[in-house]
Length: 205
Image 1 (cartoon, helix red, strand yellow):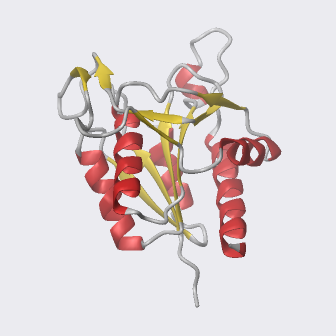
Image 2 (image 1 turned 60 degrees about the vertical axis):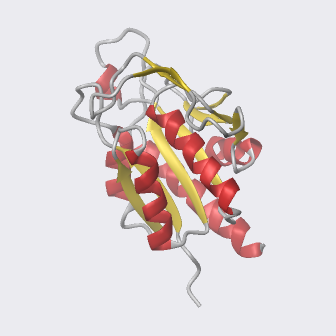
Image 3 (image 1 turned 30 degrees about the vertical axis):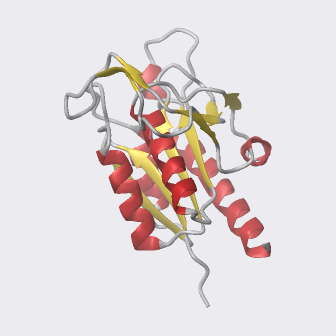
């Protein structure tokens, strides 16, 4: 019997950009064994709908969602999904949410659905620059993280889920002093290390 896949998701470009490394990562990872991928819209609400559809279609053993943190040179392991949309940036549909609950009846926050130490160790062992983050921001990334965790919890799904923010590509920060970014090759290596570790651990029960 074939084991269920690991679902990886990224986002389309946003803020007027033409490249999002997480979307490029999904193109790379789509060919990997035991992996399914989805590129989600950078839109409040629509991103969570697309995530749920991907889970329903593929019935994955785990899900790891990726977004880009424009000002970080580290992969950030997000520990909390907050019940708050709070950003002056419009999403790709032009919607701005400067201070509203994602779910009026939901808890203030959800913890990540995978242990942060496991994610940190796996990425560090693969040579990735990695750090813990306590806040996934107030934009669409956090919105997806919260909506996904809320759905998993309220539906009682057996679906370990994590959210990681990635740095921009080196070429995206080439004109910024003291910035490194992270190459797509290295990002792919980190994602593969996570997939391999997840499949091994979850197969062992």
